[in-house]
Figure (cartoon, rainbow, N blue to C red):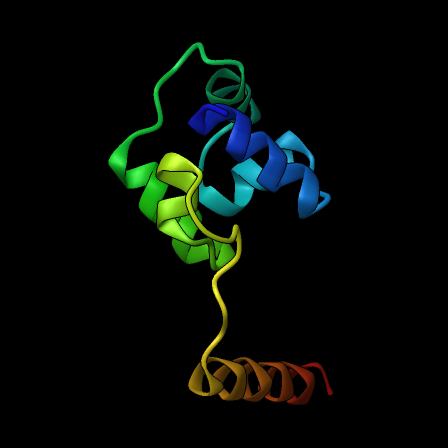
Length: 92
């Protein structure tokens, strides 16, 4: 499986359209489509952005080794929970 195919698999797993996936990374849906279809190579910056934004195992994205999604640490879970609470308070 190529990096582009893994990105497509990730996007489908997350149930995101090309546009929504691209928006989260600051690129167009055409850019994502070109990567998925093998018309463009995945840049280092894009790999880092995908891994950071979606909590993806970099080794899986680069070469298919390991699990797709990284395990979250307790600190990450607490941080996410706190962010959710603060967001709810802002909505009030």
